[in-house]
Length: 579
Image 1 (tube, rainbow, N blue to C red):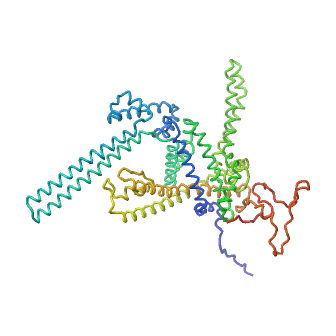
Image 2 (cartoon, rainbow, N blue to C red; image 1 turned 135 degrees about the vertical axis):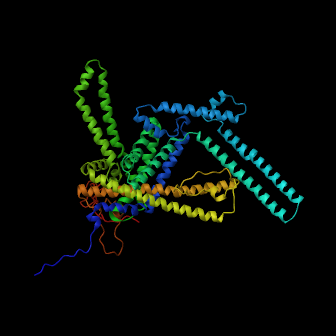
Image 3 (tube, rainbow, N blue to C red; image 1 turned 120 degrees about the vertical axis):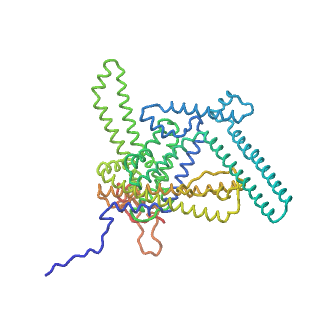
């Protein structure tokens, strides 16, 4: 009897190649609730940083290029404070020279200018002097020249009227108008340039400088990942700068600011980041949606776990380092101290091994901590334990999954960026066509002044120039700015949502590899009211027995309040959350 052949009717590619699950991250990340949480998170971080910048001492603000310079000075083992002092003195001298050149305030002396420079006093008067020069004196000169040109053209026409004279009159009037408009545009451009230079004399807030630096590193990372540049100034360099250079600059040179903003960042990140992680966890495991209220309730209930998970390892490293430092202080004891240090040097090396183990585990497993709490419904210690064990058990698998998610995330980021760029570009062209005949005081098209639109290079942000606008146009331009930047913030919200979605998938894959736990295993909270309520009348179902009270012993079938990690609670574990 001939053997019957087997026909392969289909292949489950995600089971055959589990890493393909990572490509679900885009569809999961663009879910509205995750984007909403990401947008709120981003706006709150910006709000907190802006408030802190507004109250921070002016002389402690960030100097231009300070973060990049701090990395150079750290490599050369030099003190950045010397560089800051030199820059501050040079900028003060330049600002004092501006006050003297503009004679602001009237009769100012060099000593008075140098005294006013550190706090950038009389900045408003300097700005007003520039506006007076360009928008009063120079405009009056241009208007006078235009009126004289008109009178001269009409006089020439009246002296010899005729068809040719009419034609020449029109040409002369048009040329005079063009010279006037060109002079106005040039005056506004020069005034804007000088005002921008004057604004640059004010130092940037610490949060603003850090935010701009981190955004640049994200952009560079995306570009390098797409181009395939992983080393020698590529992806690895940009990721290290993002995760280390910026925060380390703030920790080392602006410690108090780092602590204050760090508390705010950790609080906002724990609540809304935890909510995104929870929505992503249920979405990844069951392809179900968790409501905004349920996600926020979960995040608030697990706030201590979310906020302490990344902090506890750092506390361990600091404590171990302090113990070594305290032990090394014994070396101050003459003769005996160095001998004791040498005898117990093995203990110091053991502490260094602990610090290295914890630090590497934290850096490599940080991205798994929030997904652990969101998927398992556990605490910070379980998050630390699982993230460390998964990383050290399958380091190359973790590196491979992270690399795939990074490249795929870069492609998705560029796609969303392109979508928003096209949307803004089409909107700008359509609005410009409808407002094409209106002009600002600078003789530029009004729409282009109120909103220049996205640049041809793909930049979505812009600087609002209100100089040529009247008060109504300024209000309209400010409202346009708010709407445009909300759209731009969606790009950041997507990046945050993708980060949690992709890392939740990676956590599920690593858990499957190490613990052989299925990808669809997720902790589902049971709503207590469902057990307290009896069946609906006429349903024919018996009422569920109430759990025994304290004193009679625990109910045999009562659902566990805190089930073990990786298991759903007993009872109706398949209950879907409210939509």
